[in-house]
Image: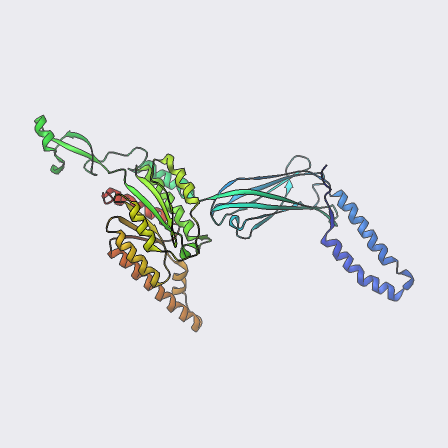
Length: 444
């Protein structure tokens, strides 16, 4: 048997009862014999409220529709459908859903239900935007609807406990721009054979006038008594490691999302291109201790494994230990690899430790250092001052920007390729640098 839905007074009834109180005082002072008027009016109001609550109509069914998988920073829809025997001319039913804060900035969504076309059916939806990866829950649902007069409200509360898995944002991977690029790029589904480039032997062809003489294969030419040239293709099966600093600085938000989430999205975009190009990709995460280290995968069919592993990269509110992390990574690599390091720094001490660790890393591997441009720092540095405190802020911001530029310059002098760009541009700049590095045969 379905439990009865309680009827409670609306704010309008409470306001009317509050207004009756001074009237009752005036009546009692001027006409004591008529004191019964005020209680009678209040009782009549309560009776009308009960009738209005009865006319609000019973609810026979309530359905919640949601997607159990979402992407960080991308909206996902929660939809509610209710069957209520009431007049559609009354005020629309209201719904509030409480959820884990990682599923939305405020931890709740509020929206109205509208007639859905069928009799006594009301539906509505809200878009929530997850702000962190991991598993969040839809906790509770509250719903209320009023009678025709707006004096009474029926309301319910339903515990939900529905899990929603928040994945890394793959919108850049699905973007038409990248898909069009992959169709036309030389490292697409079918790698174009580029004559005279690369180090992997592909085939022999008869030498023609205009070809580079360095491509002549003299042994094959001697066997066939005619000149033959080697055709090579770009090297494949390179090892690419995307290393993520998951420490304090990378947990700070940029444009509404933590820097680490922006980095994961850019890395997965570049990893997709690398897998298309026949290279092997792995992920490595660290903070105060080394964390996630996936095995190398190859082929786009394995991209889902990278996405699943990236969803488990945690947020750690501690300073990263670059020395331990990068030494651990070096020990696990058996051959020269391309290491893409996503990190950030806020003080000279941590930056010095990072530079020393990267210096040891570049002795055996090719390194790309990726950091997001600090737009807030740039705005503070370039803002027009109105007070003396603004001048002090601008000077401090300029000093921090200068220190940051020095650190990046030191990395460049070590032979590290540095990418410093807005969060929405680092993915495409990383792809460009990866492809240029691959064409130059600098990885193997």
